[in-house]
Image (tube, rainbow, N blue to C red; front, top):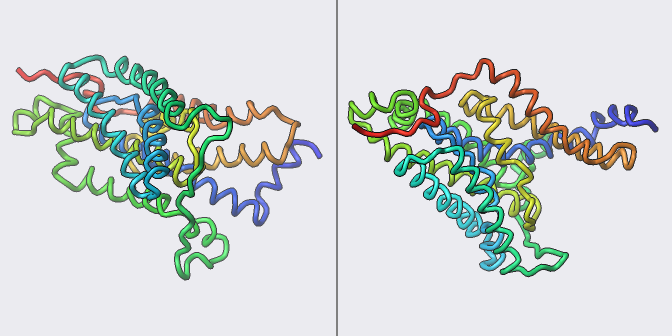
Length: 318
């Protein structure tokens, strides 16, 4: 059977249902991390350290759950680790007005080394990493039995439901609350916002902290709701994809979620095609597909993407 003959099999019966369910799971960490970055970027701070914060969240989320035996304590630990990184980012870029791009990229590099060191220090260097029992699927009564829709949407774990529930919540906060209005104001015209009593520094600090909280949760999802174990490469560029999705969604949580589902579907397709094709196509080419799609989409949307007027511009109060 040729490679092209395998493609129709992806869209048949149980295979398609499994594919769609996997796409939603794979989209969830992108949605959560991207929602946090909407807060940060709308406030005028381009935080590129998402990859590092997700890696910290994945490691400390796993370690917290592994040693306490409580998955929710692991989730909390992962979120707090993201907050810790965001505080460093906030201090350097808001208080000291350091270059946001350079600082955040250096944080990613530093955190990758730190997590590798801590992983070997705590769990050793064995070939088989320790595992923990992650969140199991929660069947929604009545809805989970529906044909096609039930297995795809209503047989997911609790963090998947939480991740997509955050989409309308973030939309309400950004567009319907005073706090959301203040965030958008300090990103568009911080001096004008300051002149009417909005504390620019505090607002940006809070926005970045929320971004770190969400990134830590996205990282904890990878270990506690997906794999059940931690590896040094578990994020695999998902933090960078989350940043790209913010631009793709034009800082709108609903568009971001739609984009995440698209990338999740492409990722699910390439994984299934790897399994079905065997050695017909190099797996490295399959792994390229989501990132190649990301580049193509960004080329298209970057021409029309607006964004906050003062994104990456430090604020100095006169």
